[in-house]
Length: 325
Ligand code: PEP
Ligand code: MG
Image 1 (cartoon, protein in one colour):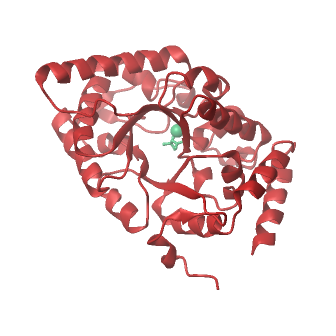
Image 2: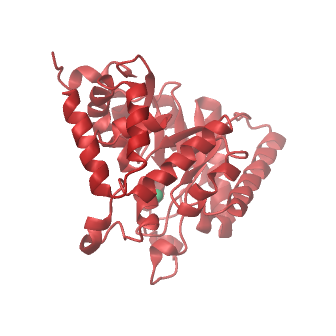
C-alpha cells in the first residue's frame, strides 16, 4: 500500500535495507524551525542568515543575532542546526552596507569575501553563533570558500573570537563543529586537502552548478544548460563525499538537488551523509528512500558516473525509479 505523504512526517527516513538517512531542512529565519520540526526534519542543514540582515534597516547587532540563533536551536529541541555566516552580495543586496556595483556580482564581492574584509561583521556574527552554541547542537559553516587560505583565515578569526569569549567567561560549546560550503569547483577539486582541516562539508549545488558549467542560475536564456545532473558536477560531488569519508568527516548537501526525488538513488549510492532541503520536500524524499536499497544504488552510482551527458543520467535515473514503483 502506498502511503500518503503526511504519514511520512512523523517517522525517520529509512531505506529498504534499513539504512537511516539524516534529512534536514533549509530555513531563512528562526521561526521557520518550527515548521521544519513539524514536517519531520532531523535538523537544520542550512540556516540562511542573510535574511536576518536583508529584512532589517540597519545591521543587526550581536544581541539580536544571538537571540535569533538561540531561538532556532531551542525550536529544534537538541537537533543539529547549521548556521551559515552571511551570504550577502551576488543577487542579495543589503542597502545599508553599500556594497559596490559590479558587472559580475556572482564572481565578485560576496559572502565570506565580504566577511574577511569587513571583519567586524564576521566577528559579531561568530560571537552570536558561539553564544547560541551553549543552547543547542549548533554548528557553523562558511559560504563561498574558494581556497584554503580563505578557510584558514575564517577559522583563525573564529579561534580569536573563542578566545575572547573565554576570557569574558561567556559560555559556548568548545567542540562546536566548523565546516564549509562546497559551491565553487576549486574547493570541490581540493576537497582532499580541505578534509584534513574542516569538520564537515555541505555541498551547495545551486552555486556549484552555476560555477562549474558557467551558467548564471538566474538567467532564463541559458537555463537549459543549468543541470545538476551534468557529469562534471557529479564527479565533483563524488570527489567531495569520498574525500570527506577518507578523512573520517561527513558531507551534507543543501542545494536543491538534495530535495529532488529523482536524484535520491544517486545521492544515496554516492554515500551522502546529510540531506538538507526546503521542509516541504522532506516527505517525498522519505517516500523515495523507503523504496531504495543502498547496495543497488551504489551500483547505479557507478554506472551513472561513467555517463557523458545530463540527459543520459536523467534517463538512467528515470528508468531506475520507475522500475521501483
Ligand atoms: C547553494 O548554492 O546551493 C546554496 C544552498 O546556497 P544559496 O542557494 O543560498 O546560494
Ligand atoms: Mg550558494
